[in-house]
Image (cartoon, rainbow, N blue to C red):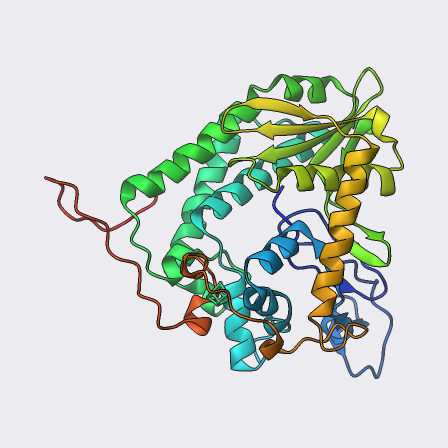
Length: 372
Ligand code: SF4
């Protein structure tokens, strides 16, 4: 799963989704005649523009927790400084932070493409028309090329919701072979996905027993909306709830916390006791599924982690009730190795040295970079 980052809701209480971009629940258009916020819709009436009601509500996610632990200033930029920058008329600094916030490294980008491809595949299966492995890979590689070209052309600077790569923004010199390795990695993950025994079981399972997580990616926890959700779930023939997390990279240190969050999700959102739940980490790079056992003790550890994390984040706020923050209250990290790959480095530490060109490979003429 890719952590829910844009923890945004539209009043009242819109539900977000578990990864990439939370879905927003927007009410159907009222028949406003003299509404100050009206926008035209087909067939008359108007949508009350959702931006008018957007509120930067405090929420918690593992991605947010990571940003907070790594650098307080980065956390501020990500969750407060960039707020509202989706509006092209926003203050230029806010807009700039928003553009930077949306950057993804090539590894994150690959992960998103794989997640989206798998979601497309499962949705097609649910609707009774399976996508072949070849067509899924072909479509994904096509999407990858289009996104890469758009990013290299800098389309995202005007349209920040379009995919943007950190490597392009910061002119990180990447060899052809490295871009091709990303493509190969995506293809490998999708091939492995199609060969997973768990996919065979999913296909055999009636779709009424599938649980698509994307509509309920968050839940209230002790007064805070928590964004954490597995990628997919289904009830096995043995009547056990299988919660799956697609991984395209290494598990990393946060894997336990992430899976613990899913255990909490099972309990709080699906109302299923842990004794009936299997948490499965699906490593798509290796084609391996690892079950993670959980019990009440480990779950309590996760609850405590979230509680402490929420408390620390709120302690940094100028006004916790209104979720108001002030930049000067969020210190910069002293660890420059973190700054090197930070999206906000051009704003925060412009003095950092640019990325050096790669050492030439002996006997190879220099070439223009391109994705394979
Ligand atoms: S450049 Fe460094 S100090 Fe500034 S926000 Fe990024 S990680 Fe923090």
